[in-house]
Image 1 (cartoon, helix red, strand yellow):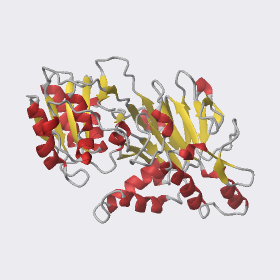
Image 2: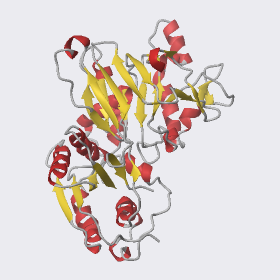
Image 3: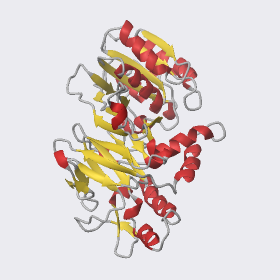
Length: 420
């Protein structure tokens, strides 16, 4: 049975009042504050007032208090991202322990820490009277309950992305601060649909706006060139039949152990922590068993598809046949992430892999230390978009984006999170 620590550290509660459906302030008042009061913990409440304000709050906490810092995120994945961006862009990081409350829209990190159908966390008897009876609310409080039970938080890997200017500007400009991400770093369809979804937020609340934005971008091919940066084990790729990691077999090798993928791309998404973007949309199932200091990347390149190849040979561009193909593959992500186990058969049909070593995969799944994404068409605006935890950034013309896993070898430097 978990115990309540005799001496609790201060907690900082960051409330995003506009995250998700705007329920964070009342949820904190009704459920979080009573729990903290029950253990006689001191707490400081900070409410964001604008986009990016969580970064300011993070810097203020670091300036005015001493580590380790314990923070309750009452918002979504983007709120945590903004806080980290402010902290990392301000020099020495320190040690941060996070309890996340799923009060945003997608809540990808919480869905990974506490997947649908997972058993509820144990509640110490001393806290039982202060925890709501609702199973849904208990699930929302799971990360905080673990924190108050003196459970050990798990390390939260971070990716740092540098937006590189073109060669001419690189010599004359100070490089921007790196962009941190702990959920997802993406380009192509995912970044483009998130960018467009903001315009739909008012008209289509909730997750439906993402589906509408996806429909606007599903025919887009994104011209770019990618270099995969090797980890200690090199660049590895998933064998869809066996589920084993093998030496990368897609693309071509490059100096220093790198691996090159030529576009165009339709889907390119990496993560270090979460296997899903929604409770049942398991887009990167392999990260459930993560590597050390690595990211997992899922890639779809439409010119590898037999139907698109046939359309190109006939003088078309393949965008008329591609929507049905990518939809078929991504639908399998809702079936426990089975899209990464699909291949093209000899007739061009999409089928489950059955033969080890089959390289005709529909989704290329890689494990490496990072990647460099370089758009190859300066006029193609959407290929210059990068999504880091839901925030959108633009690669300078002629530039690139390079994301690598941050070194968190020290126990006194980085981020941890309470999860099952």
